[in-house]
Image 1 (cartoon, helix red, strand yellow):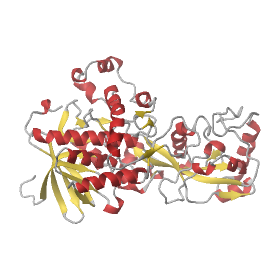
Image 2 (image 1 turned 90 degrees about the horizontal axis):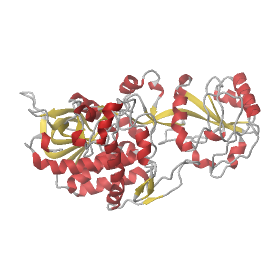
Image 3 (image 1 turned 30 degrees about the vertical axis):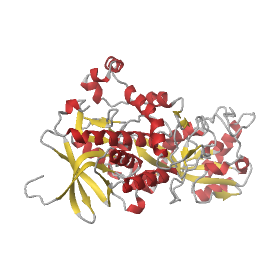
Image 4 (image 1 turned 90 degrees about the vertical axis):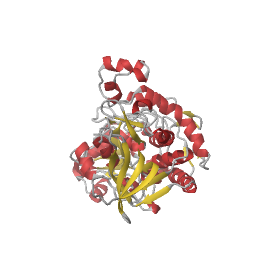
Length: 498
């Protein structure tokens, strides 16, 4: 602290920044380890939990004791860009023999991915101690490549269960309190965080710091900085994302943390912009067509199972004029079993008895739209329609093609939902090791600093669905365990703490 600074100071063993699943898993595991813990949360108590509060918390698991077969391979397939193959050969050695440069590179290394996968079942068993139950509930994906395990009550159930335990164990919570700056000791170690409380003003919370404050989906300046023009058309998938301003990532980078994850990318989901509900997604597009404001198709709506393609389709929507598109179907779609399960918006469809009237109500170019539908209908090939499996019912000679579920639009009434691209979470963050310790740009541990959840950069290219909640849970728990055990090591050289 600067001489003469009258900022109030409070001492703890562990300071957790963020109160979603990542932060609460860290707080709960740290207090289990005997640490004195404080949690800082930007939101009021009634809105605590960030994105975690609103998610259904899909989990990519075959059972409560095993992740899906593609868990590791899926993460490794999108683990980074074109890395130097000679350097990457070093990952075959033991981690303590890796060159420091390799430890700091922006990629999800195999050791981290494998450790993540192995830690999932134990983390699920740990959550069950707090009364969280899991079942294979139906999801919004009418076609899917892998099953999803869900907690009964969604992410909110996990948030409340962990928060109740933490409160009962004496963890202190500061709501409407935002972290601003990491505090450093004489040797560059992290010794706390400076925050601002709405009620008490500036406070220095001293102790080891676990950053679990989410990504930057709630910060238009950072979205524009990293995602570029058009970011102002994006919107967080749920209100909890508005609290994620990216300070945790910025604070870590400011003290030398190695960046990781693809900063220019994010997990996308299609939502109805008319709705103020949480995650008002529309996943019915494989059975109709998507057109932009010009009345033109722009993407293959049925290239694969919907849980594999919705992110790619959503990003294509973002690239359209004004970042919006319209899903158009006819009345045949309403005969698909449980079709309404794929529609989460609370707003009614725009309906009409003719294509012209529908275009007028949507505000799109009438003549172009009618020609788009005519050409689409004419290109559809004969063959059986199977809505719940890949059916190969496709178009021919059409650009872009439609590979599956190509139904003609010929049975009124027609109906449509507007769709925009929402940011579920951003990919960019910082590098951590298997103990959730933050790594600096030289490949060394930053003593006293840990990260979890969206602050941990792991995703590149396409998101492997239903792994983000597990990432928050696993690395939050790792951070809490490591920090609570490391609190006894004050004064120990950082080289001995890894």
